[in-house]
Amino acid sequence: MEDAILDEIIRKLLDAKGGRVPKQVQITEAEIRQLCVTAKEVFLSQPNLLELEAPIKICGDIHGQYSDLLRLFEYGGYPPESNYLFLGDYVDRGETTNVLPSIAYMASMMNAKEGSMNIARPVDVPDQGLLCDLLWADPDRDVEGWGENDRGVSYTFGADKVAEYLEKHDLDLICRAHQVVEDGYEFFASRQLVTIFSAPNYCGEFDNAGAMMSVDDTLTCSFQILKASEKKGRFDFGNNMLRPGTPPHKGGKR
Image (cartoon, rainbow, N blue to C red; front, side):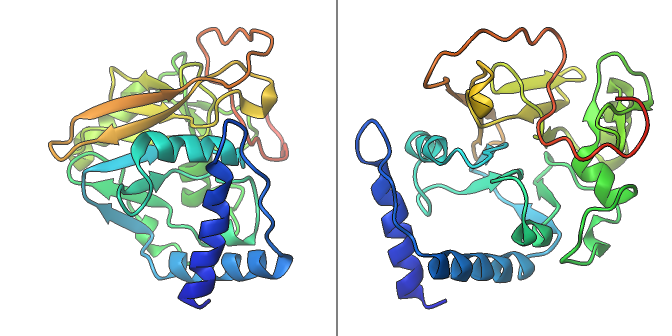
């Protein structure tokens, strides 16, 4: 795609931020297709293991809530003024998502998984194995070691496995997404793992906040919170993290 065409699409998308209620943006099907093809080319030009430098903003699930994406940019600064790492679930599904890098590593902080650099892309997520576990495994406070996952794929893991992994690879923190958390972020395993979810009022059903984690050049982390724009019925989260994007059940306990 020519830079001028890409810049025009971005300009139209950013025009939506004017006013309290985002404007509708008119983009043609051809432009959307071109944009997806260009995005795939960019993703495929990057390695599976991204080595990033601070300062950086880290965001979790967006799930197509575009107005909230603009709110995140308002808080953190629009690219290229600020650098962002998105942890997935930009929309929900699609061919373009099959070429995304799977892991990010930053200084001595981020999660780097053995073997992830050897995963060929594009790739459909299998029902088991390394890539499946990278995308679908969940922390569980009630589990020691490994447990069965209610999603029907992959596993749950306890705080002991987080500590074991970090010590083995000389890392300080695992930062992941993929679960609704009430305050937009939630720590696990004595603050050795953090879940970030950036879609407030998810699906219009949950009264959750969204969050963005800012990492400065000294690797100090802070959080910026997006409150839900509309208050719906209160949802009781209890002590467990809810799981958006559950795949089709393929056996096992639900």
